[in-house]
Length: 237
Image (tube, rainbow, N blue to C red; front, side, top):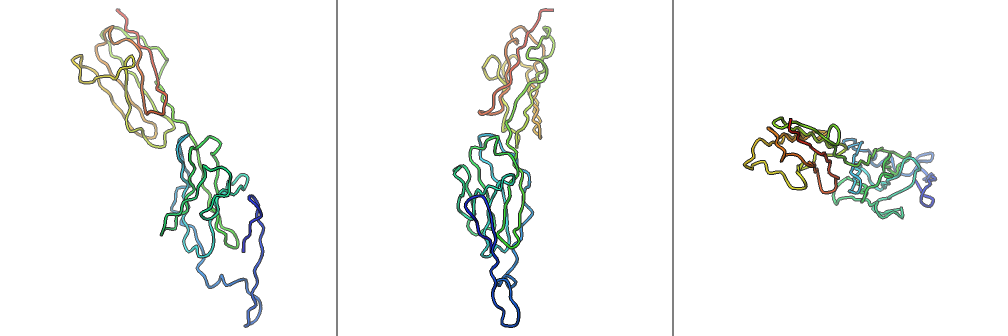
C-alpha cells in the first residue's frame, strides 16, 4: 500500500495478511485485475503560451488504486485522484464521468511549465507514464529584410510564415497601411496563396506594381499574435 508524506515525497508500507493455507500473502491484490496504462495517448504535447494545456493519461482496471500527476524533474505532486495538491490553482485534475481518462489541465500555460510530467498509478510497485509538455510562442515573420524595393510594373511578392503554432491558424489577414486588402477591387492583380502545414506559409502577390502600392504591409495570423511587417518602396525606374 502506498502512502504519501506531505506533498512531495513517498514512503511505502507493506500490508501483510495471514494466509490460513500457509504463509503470508500481501493483501488480496492477486485476485484483482492489474491496473495498466492505455498507451494510446499522446506522449508529446505542444501548447501555446497563455492558453490551456491538457495532458492525457488513461488507465484500465484502476480498481481501488489512485492516479497522481507529478513534475518528473522534482517529483512535486500536483494532483491525486480528483484533488489538487499544489498551491498553484492553474493545475486541475479532470476525470470525465464513466471514463478511464485522467487529464491534467494547466490553465494560462507559462514557459516554466515546459518539461516532463508523470502520470502515476499507486500500485505496488508504482507504475508511471511520462508525458512531455512544450510551451511555445507562435511567431509570424516575413521572409527577407524589413524593407523591400521594387520597380514600377514589376511584381511584389511578400511571404509570411507562422512558426511554433500547434495547429494552423484559421486565417491569415493581409493589410496595407493598416487597412485590409481588398482582393476584388478594381485594381486587380492581387492574390494570396496560403499553405497550411506544420509551418504555415502565406504569400501576397501584387502584379504590375504602381507607386500607390508602396507602403507598409502586415501579416496577421491571429488576435494574440503580433503581426509581421514589411515596408515596400515602389521606384520609378
